[in-house]
Length: 134
Image (cartoon, rainbow, N blue to C red; front, top):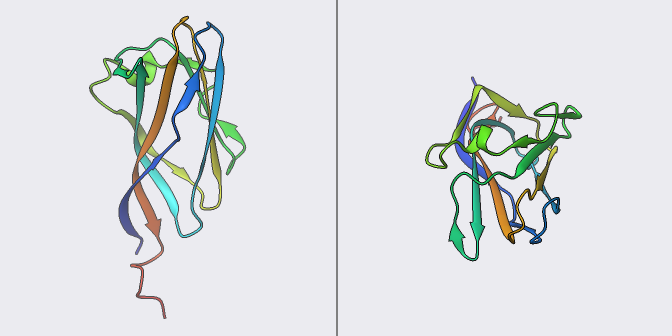
């Protein structure tokens, strides 16, 4: 029976220049020890060191494990962030394969320097409880 262990994969902060259309990327590497089942995603945005809710930038996530994007185009973070107070739920949870990568691309749609960080909250999925291997 699979053993689930809570874990969060968080990107590095992506710095966007103060120009509409500025692009930044970050790569999250899913570790080799277990597949990862993402239940929620959160997007944190700061401008001039202040946390911003409802940032109108665009977000695209590519899952290298299956060679697909999570959406057909870069989508406004409003779709994921809402009011910025609740996480975006994956329903059903999204499974990311061990040894894969998530490439996160963000686009600034405002002429303000912006920093963005994306986190995936969920569980590492082990075939059995670590330490119980035969």
